[in-house]
Length: 397
Image (cartoon, rainbow, N blue to C red; front, side, top):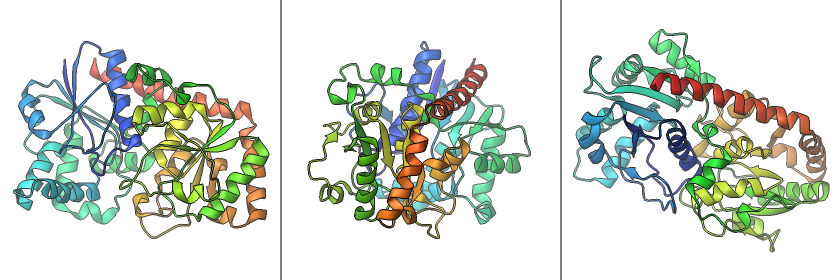
């Protein structure tokens, strides 16, 4: 079996969260379809450094040469089929290949992401897993070309699993198929064994047991550093653990906030020492718990059994979390709501001063000390991911 996995290009450098999504695809096929030929493709090349990785990203030119040999094209995760993403892909493709006209770039994008020139009876089969239309609103579906392309792709697809309920509802409306199964974020198909397989040379502090550390990564919020420091100091006193920077990602994809916290914690260490995605993922189990404003830090931490406190700004007027602030339809809140994790969400207003911080930390420590509930979270995540994985295997077999 020849399989093409279509991924999102890492436009702004190495994003560990996006990599965890794609690593989950590699791990899925490694375990269940080890004899298949699986290749990973993006619309254009990614500039990021991914270190020691078991798979490589190839561009659309390589995909075009291999397309006729494919048995299955799997669109995997991310915002690949959102309208804003569609518009951004055209813009970024022209920036990287300035010889392309807008019409040419649009056609290439539509063929690659929507199978524009494919027909119902034409192989390969198409499946979609773990994608999202979360930031779409109703006016996006008034775009005739977009709605045509998306609806045609969905109706031709052999199977579709979106990662959250908003997107599943949109798919049901567009296709008239109200039996669409709820999927997961693709990263939930990872487990710790995948990290050892992906990086056999993994050594250093990130592979040691937990040892009284609070993992901290801020890259998506503007919560004042003094407020964050107040929260961390209260957590230190309550838990006996010390903050340690999780080296998850850097500019231009993430805000540079580490230096702000170093003013309050000048001896704060940082792991892993090398900024590579597998190493950052492997570092998660080192920590007693995590404090982060970044979606896939939280998703991967919970998936590996590490509680993650999600730190959020006040709400802004955008649907998109990447615009900064708390989005009105925020993927972090939807993930936490989906798995009943709202007690681990902390908003800026809840740490506005020392009194508020103390009150918030008292509530957090109750949750962090409830081992039975934490185990139930892990059981629910694994049960949901396992059920979806079984359906994927069934559809591909």
